[in-house]
Image 1 (tube, rainbow, N blue to C red):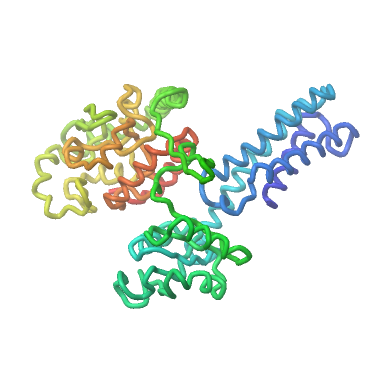
Image 2: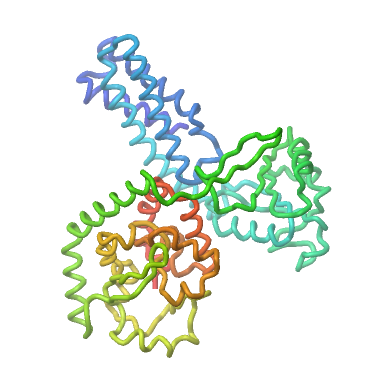
Length: 457
């Protein structure tokens, strides 16, 4: 809140000095308009729930709400200026509020980095009591530990049978103590002072029982969170609406066409063209380094599977010895990847130059030509090999509903360090919940993932 308020003050002062050609301290009209602009921005933030603790540090929704607050303020001030015919309001509407968003979003990003670092160190975490079947609770515990930046720490567990059936180690699940069964849940919450009650999958959670639990938790310190079975579907595809006196969760079918996808295709082509021109010196330097240190072609061509199962030739800078494909069978027994993937952390087929290219994903730059040709996108699922697709199950095959990407959720979440199941889960989340804003966030995070070289080998 302090960061947002400072951003408003900085934006209003900057516009008053550099746009309105005066200072906020001179000219009563300018001073009044500046105060009105600041007040409108302050009111727009809570109206758009930009200060909701549930979105702070969580994801792109936090930044989206700040942008929506700035847009709301612009519309309100523009309508007010038209109504009272205030000609001097134009500069404040079209300069101060966009400037506020331009300052507030980077400030929030920096604060988020600090918050995430503290959460990884074990601070600023909400104590959670998880309730449900042992399998579902164990999965929830592992997810909260893996994604500690989201701010949850499961400190206790209630299962249908307490510390009995289904619990591998008596009295605990994944190192978290089992403090009782589902009937003990409310009493444990009141005694333990938990901030969150997370209900995971269990056939014991009937709708009436969940409703009773919500009523019983009223007045306590805890909020109730229920994990639905449709965990990878989010955003605009989910709608909650009352039907026949019941609250229904509507799930609309994913769409892979329309204005949004046309914009995505246009952005892909234009961005790929600009990047190819800007990076042409790097292309030349890498090509010379490969040619001077290893015999063989500069580019490596490989058949990959794209949208709707169509094959295409993917381009990369060659990072291995020329006969790497023929030698792959010699190292099958040392494969360190799960599922149909093949990865070696220290692959002897990788050249010295290739190791550097792989660490910083420079070997993938020629895929910009695939984006220009329309067979790939800047952001999308990982482009699979034909032999991988042949082993796909029905869930993994849904990755082929969209174009593969030069980067994606898999790229910014660990790359080769991910398990096969996690890689599929991330790609399905992208396919099910795609949005232009998600693409922008992934592209932003790709830069830090590439510079850090996480999971690249």
